[in-house]
Image 1 (tube, one colour):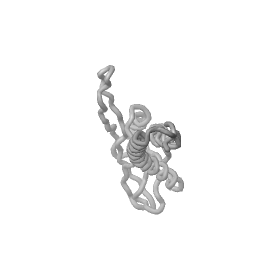
Image 2 (tube, rainbow, N blue to C red):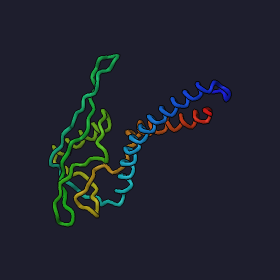
Image 3 (cartoon, rainbow, N blue to C red):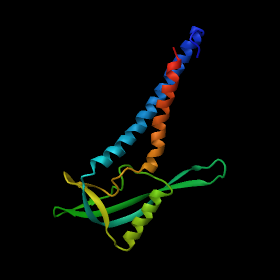
Image 4 (cartoon, rainbow, N blue to C red):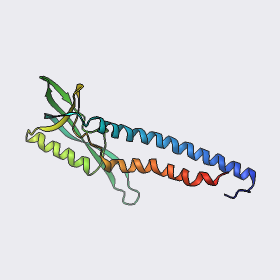
Length: 171
């Protein structure tokens, strides 16, 4: 935008830019809490104790997506739905947390759900991680799933880049 443009045009452009930045800031805030929860949970559980657990239930939860505009096909996304029991310090606990945030997809989480069903069918134990400070808190996958973080990170990075590139041009 030229430095010596019409003051009314510059003022309206500035208002539009502030509105866009406000909306983008809200999106970044919403998505960054998701990122923070996943990353903090992952790093916070690095010292958790590995324990063997028995699956008491394993199923695949399905979430139906919208119809594709080109093919008319309705997509389905999946996540594992499990219950497991474990012993820690001589006490039995029940858990159901698979990862730091419930995530649906048609590849990675579906494969994990099928793996849990197979282990449940053959009565094979699974490995979980237990919080040594709160034995009732446990998780199966404590690492960050970067496959699912990709979209979240892009949504957080694009507004920052956009702001960085456009703000210096508004006077």
